[in-house]
Length: 113
Image 1 (cartoon, rainbow, N blue to C red):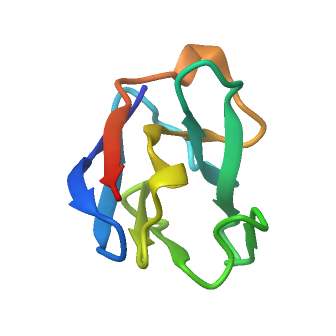
Image 2: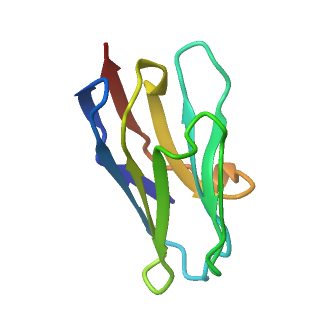
């Protein structure tokens, strides 16, 4: 599974860095991704990164979030700047596309206005 950490409560305009580590996964992951799910909403892709690395960002986070990875360690990081209240959600890391068997504990990000 892929365990996310680093969430917390932050004021609008603030920053947080999320980290994700793979456990029990012996193969090299090609595409790692961050997802989020806000209360009452469907899970959405926030960003993904290949081993290349090539990156993709959802329009809502472009220019504010940066995804990076360590291929050797199968870890991925999400640097989140200029956070907005609408970024409030539980954030998960997983491979792309989503695989339920790799679902781990998410981390809650709460942005106050």
